[in-house]
Length: 126
Image (cartoon, rainbow, N blue to C red; front, side):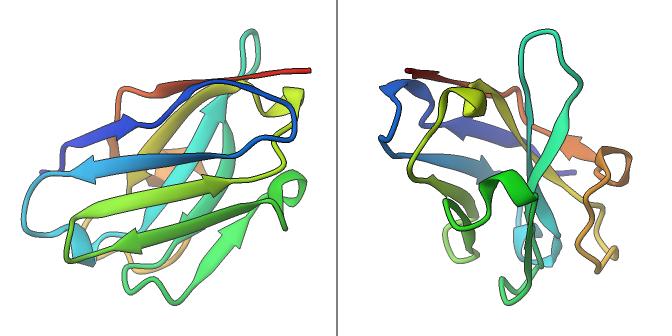
């Protein structure tokens, strides 16, 4: 079982940066593929980025490539999302998620993730 708690969201101006964090409980964090998803008001939840258990493999949705960076610190049981050059269309609730232990591949599909945080709101004003 993995419990996830996001933090770091807020209200910022377009062009600014934010770093989201996701603190994971338990001793198995380093064995889980992790991901970030977001859901804007009135829209479906969408994939943002994913990272392998080791941290060596990453994947991003096209709209955030070159602006967002996903990373993890397995010693601290923490997942990060560095967001630069924020745009108004990045406004959403951001969720971190974990794949089940034993699932080794990065995935863009939210139904591949077994554990979810409660979300943190990011609002970008233009």
